[in-house]
Image (tube, rainbow, N blue to C red):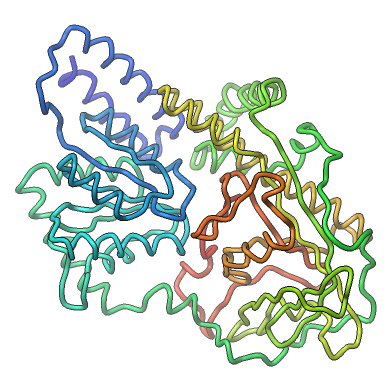
Length: 497
């Protein structure tokens, strides 16, 4: 039953997912069925010691609080005969290695969402090499691509990590890699192919070379106009916004992002898409929204504030609301090396203008209970419900951010066409370390939000932003003359929202 029915069925599910014929939530429902079927069959079987296809240690790297992708890998590997030790998120390298040695792991799987935290991956590979531990490593996540894995494979310019470092774009590719690792002939071929591709990659420009295209010494202001008048804020300083409910948030959610991205509907079209919306997504959304209100697993909170400010070269200077001549923080933003040479600092009145400008900062969260609900469902084997819950919670956080953004524009009297909102991690404001500054200014801890050592937010369902009132403000990327690889057109990292 296991070998001739269940495992082949899960393989067919994986093949259909890879071909775009099956969306991820339905894959997870198949995995739930598989789990229950195996649990039923196990009552009739004597489990032989060590009867497993292989042992995998999974972890989201240190500083990273995102684990939805890792959870999917756990689900798929477990349901295909592998023993998985999931260490969770924000896991130090030493703990990952110790566990891998303890359980004699067949492979280690590392996940990261952001560019900043993905740097833990090559460090882990180098530490394994340094200790002489020969365990293959799989890496994946939103910030990772094959080229990154190829570079991580080389612990020194001319020395590769002998067991191999392999990129998995999703859970099923992770399964495919594991199925090759556990067969010695297949593993040798996989290593040879990976090493050949990696050597070619080493001769190409790195992604970081494009992300760092901006020259910090280039501080000449762009032609962005300097405003004669700036809005008057409703107050100076920081407050917690409390006059809203979940029903106020729902209309501000981006349904396309929820359904296509967070609920896995990307690629479904035509009548099939309409059927998916009417029969699955809309009824589920209504049910989950009611559940969130009744059971309190979404607990939205907001901190926001208005600060006097000025620009100086590429810096945004923020002053004390009570003593507006006293500088309390400074943020440096990159400048486009070409085109309009835009920099976010240029949208504010320069120090030499003799007048103060105003900047709004905000942080919103749906609370730690949302994360607990997602984790509880995952642990109980309710994989699809966990996936949907996570998707709704992060979409609701973005909806809350947009609600606060709209209200802020109303308070400033600037209308809906002005007042752009920028979250850190995108090309125009890539420095996640600014989260620490925002934390000092807004006191995020008062609403249950902390900044990790990787400069991410915990709980995950949290997003912060700077709102710029300048009517000419726009979203832009840092592009070299003649353009750059497609990677730079996308966010530096997939933002929390």
